[in-house]
Image 1 (cartoon, rainbow over the protein chains, first blue to last red):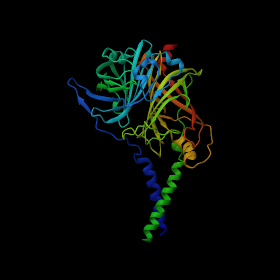
Image 2: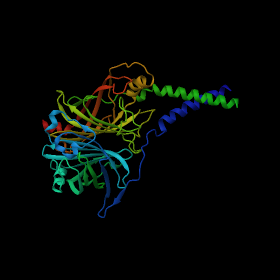
Image 3: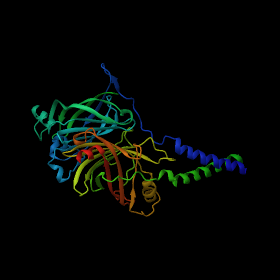
Image 4: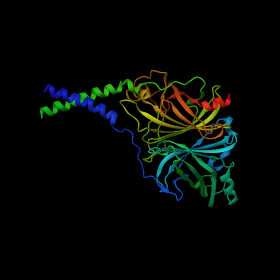
Length: 212
Length: 224
């Protein structure tokens, strides 16, 4: 009886330590990657952001125009940065089928040689992908909307497509995205604006990557 | 039947002993790397310099609840997104950071600790943007601060300093990638240090001062 009890203790002790070491305590749900092979080599993958549902937060400075003022989670910048060309946006991101797969941050700011746009896309089950591009002109989306008939303060319905970040490149990555190089495009497809300024539409990030 | 009860009882006692050993396990509480002399330091104060926080429904972030607009989808329900103002050594705002966080699959309760993967996107207006990939062991914070106060209802014994960075670089440092501006093409390392200055069981009762030390050798050479 005593031997059995001691054997139980050893088993319990060892089992618990083994579980602490070997059990995968953290395992993020992973959806199948929606990648396709492109004709000239490499793989293509598209990420989508549905507006306004996927917007988490955006900074409040005037530099972002509608992208700032209509954000539900406004990030109040310190006074020093108010006059800077600076816009920080946080989003949920979806795969090409519309399933939410991760979170993302976009920074639009001035660098040493002009405006830059940077994305950090994090898909917890796969890793992070970092994108960079020359930044678009300030209020680029607002300007395109106004050309299409949008008047600030009024509701608007229609269809406007704005290509931002020309010459976008994959700057780096971690996990499944480690070592990838390639290009990306960013397209804002706006289908409406509420009277309060909230945009409806989709941001499309189309990446083409390969391992050099 | 009697033998089975004794065996199960022994198993439970063994598991309990192992649980205690894990709680006091020295392998999982070691501090991360210390910053090197000459590193560029950016600091932040919680909660004062937090611009926004969104927390997954199944994530735990001290003093924060998931809120109405939490990240509820199963693929991101353990993540968190934080916007931060970073100040320079003089205390003036110098950068804006987005921290995208998720618990790491490299969590090992026996040898490593509870690891959080922390992706920083740091923009210094007029200079450029950096991407920092950091693995942080949050077990020392959980064990010494969070669990005693929140779970066991004990008074907080602070302030406490933590150096959570444990990777992914060799030498227990985070990796830094210069993405745009003066940082483009540069790479280096980083470590984080923070002091918890207040912590209580009530929501929003946590306060901390954090510091991110960036080590970009190429850039320092260029500046000289």
